[in-house]
Image (cartoon, helix red, strand yellow):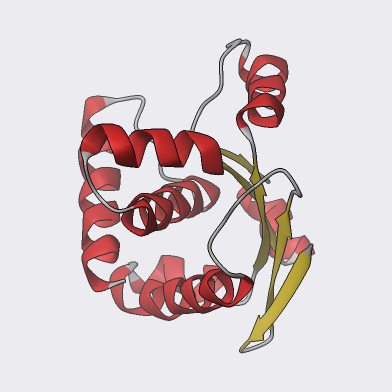
Length: 159
């Protein structure tokens, strides 16, 4: 199942694997478009300037598929909640493409149950988290993590 949304000339391709039991296609289209709108108000202006016109893809999948990707690209043989694959900044600008976000719906369901909060909130958080990775944020170093998670929380509260 594919969904293409077009908001201010940027494309978001959403691929939904048949093995995912998910929210409606309309919910994903609305949420991804709303995230784009919020980026303008939250990101620093110099960064927003080059990000706002770029497209990305979102793949909604299961634990088995995300585990294969996690093993192949991160050498971690277990499922994870979200993976992001991004291009270098220069390539992003030249190709007008940020990269790919992959979310395991099953893992998101498990985490929302464990944390005792709604699945919708978990999915939004994972989408934001993946998007921030696409635009260069990371959390490997404590200082960077503080910046990324503060920005993630700010966007999540507005979304």
